[in-house]
Amino acid sequence: MVNRIKILTEYLDLKPHPEGGFFSETYRSKESYTGESLPERYNSDRCFFTSIYFLITGESFSAFHKLQTDEIWHFYEGNPVELYVITESRELMKIVLGDKPEYGMRYTYLVDKNCWLAAKLESGNYALTGCTVAPGFEFADLEMGDRKKLIKDFPEHKEIIERLTR
Image 1: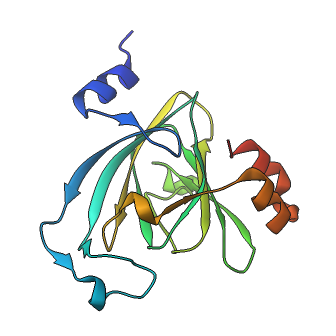
Image 2 (image 1 turned 45 degrees about the vertical axis):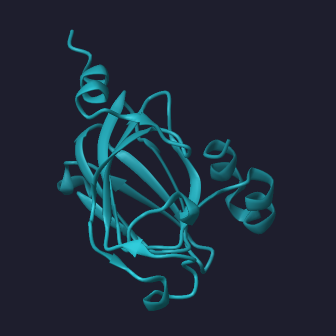
């Protein structure tokens, strides 16, 4: 049997991501915004946008994190992916990315800036997704969720926070 995870990991040069899963940057625009032209939350210049491949396996997940920037998730292939988003108004949303719109799955989903986000497989062994961020992603903009602090801040979502934090 063909090991699709191994093929994708090698072909796309995927590396472990700090939030979980595996990634490779596919594009970083050569043009950038100056720090002065961006909102104050950015502490330096940012390129116009970045894009990555992101692979989630049955043994991995994307732990709760948030960005200072809107992020568009794209579904490419594999098993459905559950996105869990805690909005600024404290609402927990579950969105399923996949290739069966007749079952309510989406090919893309926009996660608003400053929302807590985690992702895992609905079932199965892998999903290849992608993420596009504008202005472009910098690791300085990534805030990983601390389990104890998130539970303190969102006790009503304790169960999913415990499952999707490290």
